[in-house]
Amino acid sequence: MTAKPATDRVRLRRLHERGSYDRGTINAVLDAGCLGHVGYVSGGSPVVIPTLYWRDGDNIYWHGSSASRMLRGAEGTEVCLTVTHLDGFVMARSGFHHSANFRSAMIFGTPHKLNGDAEKLKQLELFMEAVFPGRWSQLRPTTAQELKATTILAMPIDEASAKIRTGPPGDDEEDYALPVWAGVLPVSVNYGRPEPCTRFAGTAEPPIVSLGLRTTN
Ligand SMILES: Cc1cc2nc3c(=O)[nH]c(=O)nc-3n(C[C@H](O)[C@H](O)[C@H](O)COP(=O)(O)OP(=O)(O)OC[C@H]3O[C@@H](n4cnc5c(N)ncnc54)[C@H](O)[C@@H]3O)c2cc1C
Image 1 (spheres, helix red, strand yellow):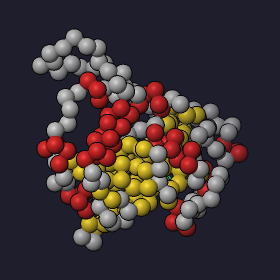
Image 2 (cartoon, protein in one colour):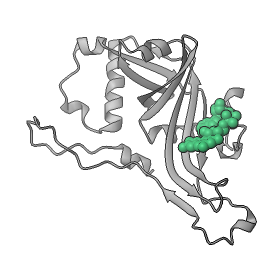
Image 3 (cartoon, helix red, strand yellow):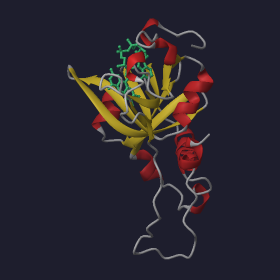
C-alpha cells in the first residue's frame, strides 16, 4: 500500500494490500485505457453508464452530446468513475480460489462543465491525440456548431484509489498436490486489422493507435 487515502470512502478495506492511492499508479491505470463507467444517482435510482474518457494532468474528462441525459445528470452531482482492465483469469485448484488479475481505478467527485470554446477545443484535441497520435491535425476543423453540440465534463482526480491483482492462484496448501490445471489465462485487448470505409477517398495508411502500446507500459 502506498500513499494515504484522500478520504475514508476511498480507503480499501477488502484486500487492501492490493490497493494504492499513489497518483502515479492511478494515472497509469487511467492512461492505459479510454473506457470507463460513470455511476451516479438519477431521480433516486442508481445509473452506471459506460463512456470514453481521457486524462489531462490532475483532471479526468468525458464528453458527449449536449442533449445527453448522462452528461446533464452527472454535472454538478456526485459521481464515481471506474476504469477496469481485465488482465487474466486466475484458475485455481478449487472454485473458491479462482480469481482475476486486473488493474482498476475509482475516482469520486463532482464534475463540472467546460464552458470556454478554447478550453473545449484543447481537451477534444488531447482526447483525440491520446487515442490516435497525430490525427487531430489531419481532420477538418471542428465547427462552432459542433462545439456547441458537445458537452465536456471535467473532474479532479483528488479522491481516488487503484486496486491491482497480479500473479498466480493462491490455493489451500493441501490442494497444490492435485493434478488439476492451475495458473493464469492472460486476457488482453488487441486491435484488429483496420477496415477502410467504403467511401475512403485517400491513400494514407491507417493511423497508429496508441492504446495498445500504452497497455504494455
Ligand atoms: C476485473 C475485476 C473483477 C473483479 N471480480 C470480483 C468478484 O467477482 N467478486 C468480488 O467480490 N470482487 C471482485 N473484484 C473486486 C471488487 O472490485 C472489489 O474490490 C471487491 O468486491 C471489494 O469490494 P468492497 O466494496 O468490499 O471494497 P472496499 O474495500 O470496502 O471499498 C472501499 C473503497 O476502496 C476502493 N476500491 C474498492 N475496490 C476497488 C477497485 N476494484 N478498484 C479501485 N478501488 C477500489 C474504492 O475507493 C472503494 O470506495 C473485481 C475487480 C475487478 C477489477
